[in-house]
Image (cartoon, rainbow, N blue to C red; front, top):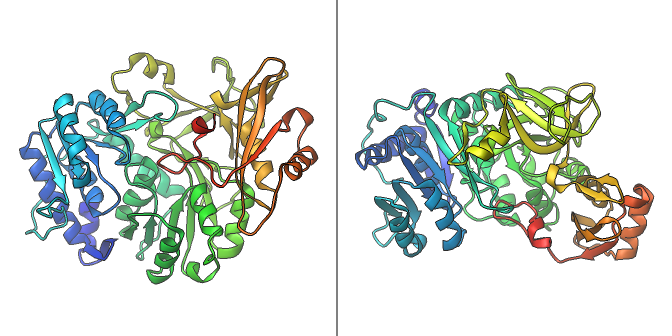
Length: 490
């Protein structure tokens, strides 16, 4: 994909970050050079861990590992040594590539997990993967469709991380599937990447999206609302991808308004549910549609999207991408297919589904049954086949015998004009099974108290759904990828 784009538009700007600007010819040359280096170090058929922050190096490194015929293992550079050690012991990479600030931490871990080489970037010698080089061809042969391309670790906030084995065929076909529903323009899209590029959503919607359409990818090393708004206006951004945290931060910033978004064509929202009130607020101010989608690391990652050219339904995550079957089944054992507008577990089947979990045959067998991926998410389909996510199966609360879905309550809370963000959890209760607790943050300049929240919920929810406690916080805890961290709330 990158090679063909570079052949078609060699002089077109490909990658921009912190003043560095690479053309597609320069981008491909950097990828090819590092790929040959990795092959010489024995990477082919093995794994290469990338522990890098946002910047050109992680973009080049991701493509180079794939071109070298190795499996890329993207890891969060904000993880502690303990967290990185657990994953590296499981992944057993041959090579680790890291930022210089992490070299002292990763040196002992590399020795422990059996890595043969530790490549440090940005050290005192100033090594960068963007350094000028003569143009060379990509390694031959390139990987085959059935080769493993990515080992994406997931589930770190709920337990021991699991490594998702993804084949090149699954990754490649998912680029085309996504492009069928939310196609990027070929006239030079300008795509802003705010999310961390070790995350599968950022890779799909930013890194691969830009290379596929021949667009320019603008990578933000560190997120601040001011930095995003400045880049939006100065670089005439046409595509913005993010999650709820991004939209909350932008709409609460003093500089938010129509001016920075005059060139914006499309906004993608994923990784977590976006409350409808926030979606409408953002669209009203910017004039750009927000297209919600849904997926998992185990599924390529993209499974559904509201189409760019077609019917959009607020609160829905859209329709299934091509060549994908999606069904709602009973949440107990998944053996019975449910009708439309009935909540159950989402299961999917398609060419983008993972090969399995690394070294976890029992968990692979539980997730992959008879060709279906059981997502662990609860949802329902409407009469037009649009999917509505209701919650994680494990997040469903049982309150006095009634099923309560935190996502529904969070939507209601966010409809209050003073609420910026909301999270709902359940705590064990001897009488009712679960006692519902709601956490919210307040929009800038607004005032709010627990009594007002309770009154709002009583007007919009059945009595058993109304939270017993309301806590107003300065901020909600977030995971490294910007999702509300309910484990910390618990």
